[in-house]
Length: 176
Image (cartoon, rainbow, N blue to C red):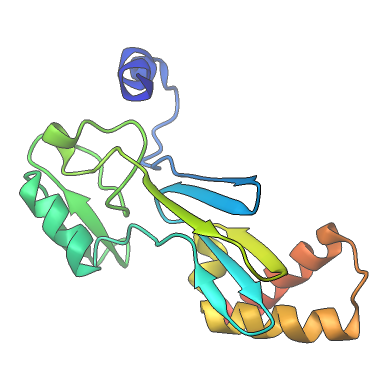
């Protein structure tokens, strides 16, 4: 229904942006964590002993996503002008940088419009990180986990907003 609604109102778009829509939704119910991801956001759970990837970026350079794009009639190509990998399709004028995105008809774009859903039972105490491509293109899951563990030892009662802002600054400094 979301895809149909998007297609019906897409003509109203005033911007010439070629941006894709992504979503990362998490629900914690009785120590079970459900994660639904579409696009290039990522979620991890960090405990004192482990890191659990709750989602995966739908990066078209990952073989399973590239194969899916190709099965749906698209192709993954490098665009020098944009300096990034994009998904192209004969009927698609835009060039998305993800293999899963909201608002695309898979038979006309090569893009998969369905989210990947995961479910895990939380047995340890820990910390949950949901972030967009900006963080994950600069830092690995292991770097984020190490930073969380170190920061929580030094400043265990810091507000979540300060914690998040510091992580963004770290990603920005590593990404440049």
